[in-house]
Length: 312
Image (cartoon, rainbow, N blue to C red; front, side, top):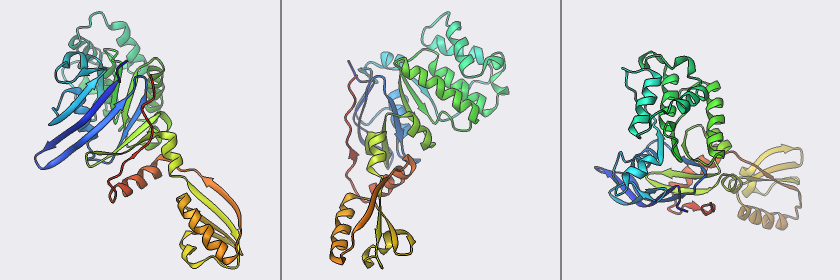
């Protein structure tokens, strides 16, 4: 069974700007996958290559085993993309827009599915409204509908909830979760990291055209959890004062980032005859992990890549 998405050594430059610098990535069928990174990291360029809007300078990209260049018709048919920008034709109604999109894929008599999309995207009462008359959030809902109108097995969501209200966000994610449960592969890019943390099984983080982290969401979070050390002593060894987060008389709380630091602290405490009262592991969220990975990638070329693609 082919991967939903396969990217091998894909590079793309725009003049002197290296948007992608040799990206390797696979997404298994049925995954809910997150593609995160700061602005300019190369996420949209990678999506554009998969969608056939941009050609790579080198490398290979496939959707469900179909090369996006040599087998582009099948690759396009297998993919649905919700773009980051609001792009629409101002001369048609919402229903006409979705019918025209169906026609691009040779689909006739698609009204039953269009009606279902309108319902789940809360657009039923806007079905006959002209696209010009819609708010920005409503236009974004139509973009989601256009991406899903041909029932693609692989769905890419590029900032799908930017500028939409909380109610739509909740209903949209309920619908997308249902599609994923039905076997659709979902690839999400978002700056709402709490969404990625709640939804994505695996996450890749990009910076400056490279993947700097790729792991399961749970492993990424556990990797960046901190260690809280409680000890009783008249004073803390001077080297470790910067790690003290709270003092309660002679009881001190220290926060450490790695187990290597814990080994060093234990050695220092043994030299002072101090015993640890309690050691706990504190969790973190994806935002903190993201910030630490982005900061660390500025000084290291080694990517955090630990989890293999899950078997289909």
